[in-house]
Picture 1 (tube, rainbow, N blue to C red):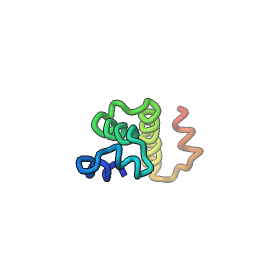
Picture 2 (cartoon, rainbow, N blue to C red; picture 1 turned 30 degrees about the vertical axis):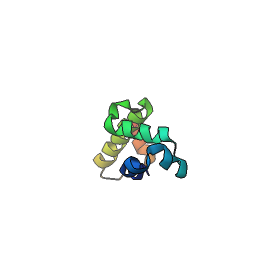
Picture 3 (cartoon, one colour; picture 1 turned 120 degrees about the vertical axis):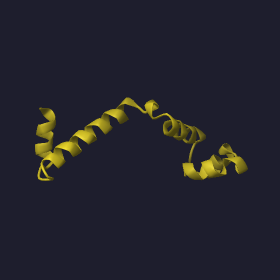
Picture 4 (cartoon, rainbow, N blue to C red; picture 1 turned 180 degrees about the horizontal axis):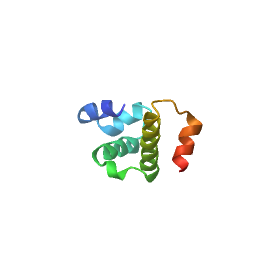
Amino acid sequence: MVDFIHNNKDRYGVEAICRILPIAPSTYYRTLDLTDNPEHRAKRDLHDEYHAEQIKRIWKESSGRYGVRKVWQKLKR
């Protein structure tokens, strides 16, 4: 939806498109800001990304044999 707004903003304007589509103009501008400046992401997003990488690493090291419980135990160490 953001791509559609971005591609048509010169013709119709962001606010006019957002009135028709179920998206707030602030959401559009926030998405653009996060695309251009990934350092503006929330700390929670960065935290989740870090842990997702750790979970994938542990799972790959076990050749996909570890389930949730063993991965959790490895993370707690």
